[in-house]
Structures are given as C-alpha cells and as structure tokens.
Image 1 (cartoon, rainbow, N blue to C red):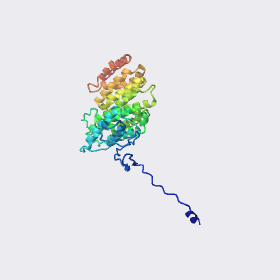
Image 2: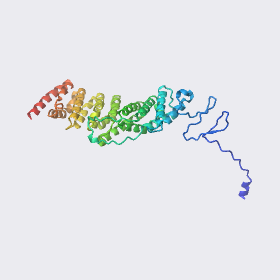
Image 3: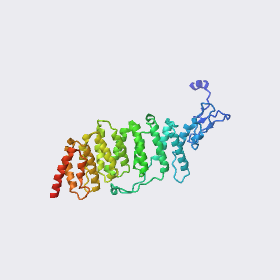
Image 4: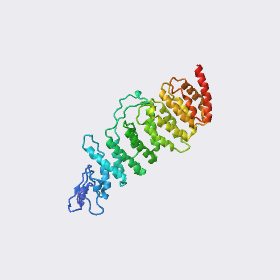
Length: 400
C-alpha cells in the first residue's frame, strides 16, 4: 500500500550537472568552454577584456619586460614553479633555468615583487627543491683532521645556479614580512638550512651565514629554536663525529648574536657558554675555528666580567698535553682573558693558572716556554703577582 501511495507522488525534475571548477568560460567571440586539466600545465592566456578579467597562468619563459604590469605577479609565481625542476648539467633546461633565476632576482631587487601567500609558498618551495639535498659521504677519517688542515676545498659544480638561489633567498628574507612567512619559514625549514652548513663548498657556507643571520634577526620567534639547534650541532661535533665543515661560520654568526645579548645575561645564554662553547676547545681541529671561538668567549666576558675566572678554569680543563700548536692558542686566549680580569677574579684562578704556566716553562717547545709575554697584557696588579710567581717558578724549574 505504501509503495502505491509513493508512486503517485510526482518526482522532481533532475538538474543538469554543475560546471566543473576547472572549467574556464571564454566570454569572447568563441562561446565554447575551454577546460583546464589542473595538472600543472599552463592555463589558457585568454583573459576577459574588461577590468575584472580572469587571472590566468603565464608561460614561464616570457620576459617581465614583455608582459603587462597586471600579469607580472602571475609570471613571478610561474617562473618560481619552473625553477623547482631539477635537471642534470647536460640538459639544455639548465640554461633556461639560470636565465629564469636571473630574471627573478632582478624582479625582486627592483621592488616590483609582491610577497603574497602563494608567492611566499612558491619561493620557499623553489629554494627547498634546489638547496636541500644530501651531501656525498666524507671519506676522510676524522682522526686525521688537524688544527692546521690545509686540504683543498671542494667546489660544487652546480654553484652557477645555486648562488642565484641563495641570493634570491637572501633578498626574500630581507623584504618579506615575518608574520606572513612564518608558516613557510618554520622549524623544519631552519633545520634543513642548518644541515647545509656541512657543505664542502666555502662559498655556500658563506651564503648560508648571511641567510641564517638575516632569519635570526627578522624572525624573532625562531631565535630560541636556532640557538638550541646550533647547540645540538656543536654537541654532536664535540662528542660524536669531530667532523663538521661549518663550525667556524656558525660561531661567526653567534659572535654578533652574543654581542646583542641584553644584560643581565640569561641563564640560558650562560649555559650555552659552558656546555657548547667551552667544550669546543677539546677537538683536535680547534685551530680551524679558534679565532671565531675566542671572539665569542670574549664577547661573553665583555658582557659579564665575572665570567672570566670560570672561563680560565675551563681553558685549564681542556689544556692540551702533547700538542704544542694547540697550547699556543690556549696561551693567547689566556692573554685575552687576563686583559679583562679583575684582581678578585684573578685570585680565584691564580694557583691553577701558575701551575699551568710552570708546566709551560718546563716545556721543550721554544714558543710554549715563553709565557712571560703574559706580563705585557695583564692589568698592573695582576702583572706584579705574575712577575713574582714566574720568578719563583723559573727558579724552581731551573733547580729541578
């Protein structure tokens, strides 16, 4: 009975299927719709003749000079997407890619580029596709690395276009609004950028240094994470591998960062000094980055002179036993510390320091047993104490 009643109710007429979202209607003379497959192929360049025309994808090989100002932003994104493609060096595509990168760099440098959300996403995707890569394994044994490692640097054959990508990334990080880019320039992006500091190419590490410093200065929310990530790199280098190409560049960045720390120093910053910087005196390859390391420590002591005593104790803890070249570096660093120490701080380390100086006087290396140079850099009150102690130490070593 119910089926008979329902059969008498008139059914609604079926509506035609709605137009697919990927279908573009051409309002020109041709009334046939043009379908866009949505598979990444360039869209039709046919646009509405009125002021509110349909935005269409632009062929990436067109020059910015040959296109209307309204379409330049579309061309900007199109060229960025084109440069995401990775090709080998025998491919003719590489020349087209380099030409596109040069045009992108000129366009961004001119101030014409607008860093909208699609543009930010496209430029970060392009940089990630070209820069974030796995380096070949290092065949040299880390135990053979010394503080005077004079190995010839290895240069990346792809540098001709990698350099353009780095320059574009540097301009981007300089001009973009940090709030607008925070979704793309995130923790994952920074970590992969830090991984690149192990590159064998010194030119790449130099570019990375500028980019990371710019990100640290602009993206304030990322600062604690960057400090923690760099600390982890240092821990792995000191306690596990003793092999990393970018320690000097990372310390160079932190030299300027430490000089900007507010007073009084936070406990987090002091822990970075004790747990990360001071243990960097331990590896055999300390000579490669010692200048940058000493500068970072001097910046800390300059901020808080009360740290001097603990820094000297740290140096004595990692003092080399059989490496005379490394010992000379430590002596020069002690000289810098004595220039900045007060009498109160000096008295805390006076006994262990004099014992170490006594050992230097007893050394068979002619440069190491010349610590009286310390007399010319220490403050006057410290100088007198050093002079008397050195005289007694010299007499003791001569008699023994």
